[in-house]
Length: 114
Image 1 (spheres, rainbow, N blue to C red):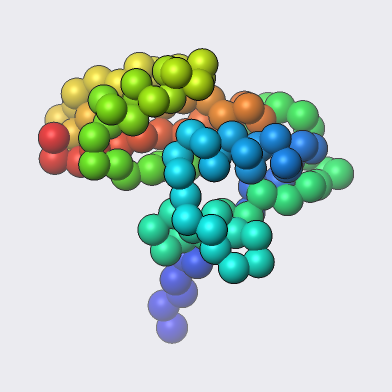
Image 2 (cartoon, helix red, strand yellow):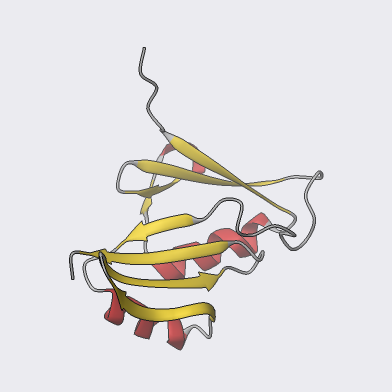
């Protein structure tokens, strides 16, 4: 049996703030049950009492968002005042940039093949 990744749960001490940030930053579709739909993978941001306010190990899981235009996406994110861990740059397989969400999680924007 092959399993399919259907969704990701992001635990947060302030899920409303984090959900609003993802909504403005990356423009997901509204999925059922409060999920943010990013091209078929749902992200549920939920209140958790077993997580800290800021992720102490943000490199453990990185959310990769594939975009059509990484530079335009970066400009949009700059307008929101995001903190970049690694600014958008061309690499062998495309254009990549890593930023930090309000909970300290690493988020990558990727334009493959660019």
